[in-house]
Length: 405
Image (cartoon, rainbow, N blue to C red):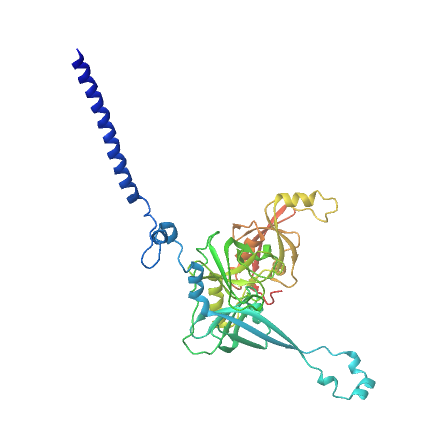
C-alpha cells in the first residue's frame, strides 16, 4: 500500500521540478530578448563617445532638431539681398525776423544771415533687392522727399540710389542702384497662402542695428489701415508679433521657407509686441507700376465714412444731444463730403448711408474702399444711398486721388 503513495509523491515532485526548470528557462530568455528591443546599454567606444548618446541623436525626436534651425536657413536664403537705406534731406532754416533788422545787419554784416547753415535731416530704413539689375523695394516713407539715398549691402558695398517711383497711398517705393547685373535677389513668395499661426521672420535694421532678425507668428490677416489708425492708406496688413521697430521699415517679412510674404512697416511707434507688413502680392503689383510709370493712379469718391450698424445708429438716436437721426441699418455712413470731389458732383450728402455699389451690398467702410480701389479711373459707379426714409440711386464717376492726405 505504500508503493502507490510513493509513486504519487514522485510524480508530484517531478512536476514541481519541471515547473521550476521551465520558469528558469523563460526568465533567461526574457533577459536575452529585452535588451535587443530597448536602447543598448551605454558603452564607451575607443574614441570616448557614448553609444547611448549616438542612439539618442538618431532617435526620431532628436532627428527633427538639426544643428541649423529653419530660421537660420531662411535668413541665409534671403539675408544678402536685404539692404540698409540711409537718407538725407536738407531743410532751409526759417529766417529769423531779428536777422532782418537793419541795425542787426549793419552790426554783424550784410552776409551774416546768409551764412546760417541749413538743417540736415537723416533717416534710416531697410529694403530688399527684387531684381538682379538693382531694383530695391522699400517703404515710401523711408525715401519720400529725400535729397540723397544711399543703399548699403550686407557685404559692405554702398551705392547711390535713385528713387524710381513712390506711392504714398500704399506706402511703397522702388529704388534703383547701379551695381552690375549679379546682385543677390530675395525670393518672393505669395501672401495669398499665408495663414494665421504661420512663422513670421522679420529682417532689417531696427534702430540702426544692422542685419537684425526677429521671430514671431502671423497674428492675423487683412487688418485694414483704418483699424490700424492710418486712414490715408489703402491697405490690408499682415499683423505679426515679430518685433518691427523704426529702421525695420521696408525690410522683408519671411515665411519659414525664407520667402518674402510681406514688407515690414513701422507705422505704429506706440505698438508693443505688434507689427504690420504690407502683403507681398499687393507690393508686386504696385512695384511693377512704379517701375513702369513712376506712380500709381488711385480712384476715389471723396467721402469720409464710418461703418454703420443698427446698434451704433440706435446709440446715436437715443442720445438727446445728437444733431441727426440715423437709419438703424447696416451700411456706410457719410460723415463728410469733400468739396469738388466725385461724390459732391454726384449729389452725395453728409448723413447719407451708402447701401450698395453696382448692386453689391456694402456693409463696411473697408469694403467700400476696396470696391473703389479696384475700379477704373473714370468708371461710373451706381451707388444706392438711403437719405432719411427714402433711397436714391446716384451715378458717381471716379477720379484720380491727387493727395494721399
